[in-house]
Length: 293
Image 1 (cartoon, rainbow, N blue to C red):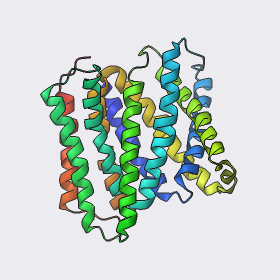
Image 2 (image 1 turned 45 degrees about the vertical axis):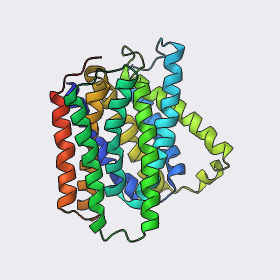
Image 3 (image 1 turned 60 degrees about the vertical axis):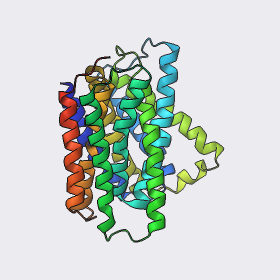
Image 4 (image 1 turned 180 degrees about the horizontal axis):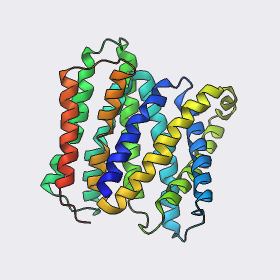
């Protein structure tokens, strides 16, 4: 079941590229809407299904959940939104595949996993595949402003680092805690923390300018990415552990790239197809890899 959870999470994260691309409001504001909608609706699901309660977690677990909520959900995805709006889905999404090598090496460095050659090769394929997919953008005629492209790449790299750190943090939270509740509390605490950031930066007043259309678009992103995919990611994490899970879910840029081509006509070529094949190959090797925690 761990593989099913991981692959399903990758598919949902790929589909989340649609509302990201359709969004018009600045990502730093829309991410607040996305988090709030996901928090409210996921909380409703937990209440209706009788799963809502305060789990008995250690203080260190609460600190990790808070940091993940702010760094991974709020700031990290905010940078990703900005990257997509500046450089397109077929640029921003592949760069996030570098999280495979970041998480695998980071997990080994901090003693969270025993690094094997097969797992390292799998992470390398997934990361290189993402870079190859991004290189394929050079022949994409939909982006002509190279300064805007470079800025988008920089935003995507920052997002990749923050998301990788968030995944390593959440992997250290007590495995016995219900994954739906962990997701909801991370969203809740992250929403509060990110709202505080907007207040300090003087941006909170601009939330009033977001239209109903943007609320719906960003809300869809919240349901697909924050509530759905992340819950599935945590379920996979508890079974496969952080290394293999990360490599498998990093195949989601392949889904996002196809969406960019089919829905947004962003362009496809042999180089991009090679990158997608490498990412899928990395995911297959991750399934075969033996990971000891």
